[in-house]
Image 1 (tube, one colour):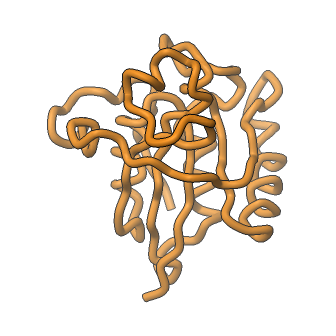
Image 2 (spheres, helix red, strand yellow):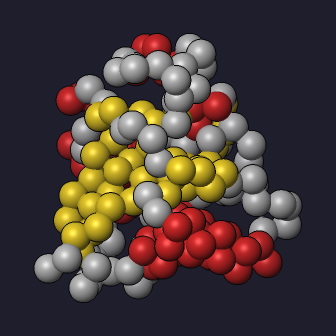
Image 3 (cartoon, helix red, strand yellow):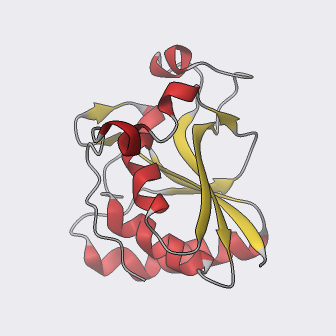
Length: 162
């Protein structure tokens, strides 16, 4: 088994985590905050939209069972990447659509899949593709929230495919 990691932001992280947890080959997910300037932010701080952080999901996956490319395709399928700084009724920069890449290969593939996804949408894709920065795990009560409570899918359309 060779594990790799990816970070995606697609609005409220509860449903995003639940979605990725259903993808075969994903071995672990953690919700948290990334892409901002505040060290060790709390949920309350991120909600003020002053930290610059996005609600995001750190996805650890087995590359022998699922590729980064498949995860990218799932990402563009699960949310509306044409909405700037929002998803559904959640509004603000913390709900932005973003891919945080760890290396040049991830960046290149993210740009390729973003371009290939354009015909699926009537409006331009606004998803940011930016270098990964420090990822701060969210508070325990946010972890696996949808799986534990059955709530919190928010804007996520759940129907993963390989």
